[in-house]
Every structure is written in structure tokens, then in C-alpha cells.
Image (cartoon, rainbow, N blue to C red):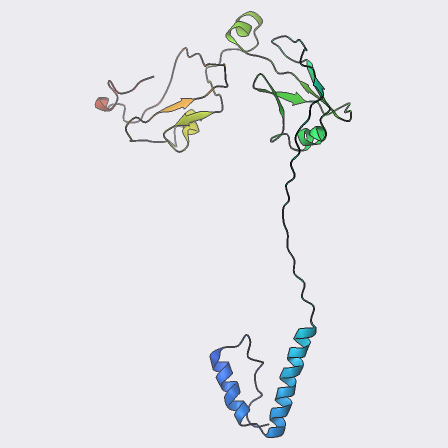
Length: 217
């Protein structure tokens, strides 16, 4: 053979390598060209015989409607809760409540009914009824005490993260300079928050024109 050894076949090489190969190939003798051609054919035949495995993955979500045959709909309990509530005839509900408690749960009076993960029976789910805090139950049965730091966990406002107004951290302050800016706290359906006092921190409070006749509750 004349010159350097011809490089690998043309796939996966640069244009400069291809040009160098062609130049070298032209200088080969007829016998060497035949040998080179045979090597390329052998390489292509090996590729053709190779087994290529393709891997793929997919997520399949199956939904099944819940069918309840009976429940403790006539059960009676006090404001304090703690009574057992049963739901029967629900296929797969026990597994869903046990394995994914954040996504799957039973709600009574718009509150979570705590799943009881013991004495399980096929097709039957039992949970503990929550206490019900109202102005009546708080006054007469002391179900809940007044809090000086009310937090419902659900907030709204014109800022990106209204929860920052209620996190007790004064070092990181949210701000909104737009007209009509507001912030508030939500409560579940049928419930309200009763305020006895409000304590808040406002920077630049000495600039009275920004707050006088503008700040409202």
C-alpha cells in the first residue's frame, strides 16, 4: 500500500478525513483497492447483522369510578369528633388512602376524615370524624381556642406569594406598588375568621401620604 492507512468508512468522520482518504485511495494499487473495498463491504455486512435494541417507557393511567354501596350517613357524633365513619363497597379505596394520603382522602364538613389503618376489611374503609370548630362549639364546648396568630393556610393577593405576609419573617418583605394592591386569608366554605386585633409591619411608615385614607381593612 502507498501512503498512510485509509481511515474508517465515511460515516462519523470529518470532511478533511474524507478528502484525505480519497486522495490516499487514488494512490493505491488495484489489488490494494480491492482489499480496501472488501474491508468496507465486510464492515457494512457486520452492521447489517448487528442486533439493535430500542428501549421505550410510557405511563398508563387507568381511572375507575368509585361505587359506594353504603356509608355511616346516619351516624351521630359530637362537635369534638372522634367517631368512626365507615364507607363500604369501594374497591381499591383502602390502598389509595393508605399509599397516597396526600392525594386521596375522605372529607366530612370540608375537613379531612383521618384514615384508620388497622382492622382493615375488604371493601370497607374507616376514618375518624374531625372536630367541628364554630363560634357556638368554641364558646360552649371549648373545641378550639382563640389564637393570636391566625393562619388558615390559604391566602390570596396581588403579589406572587401572598403567604409571605403571614410567615412572621420581617427580613424578607413582599412588595406591590400597583394600584388596588391587596392581600388576604381564605377560610373553608361556611366559616369566617373573627379578628379581635391586627398587628402588621409596614416599611417607610413615616411617609404618611402613602397610607392615610388609602389603607383599608
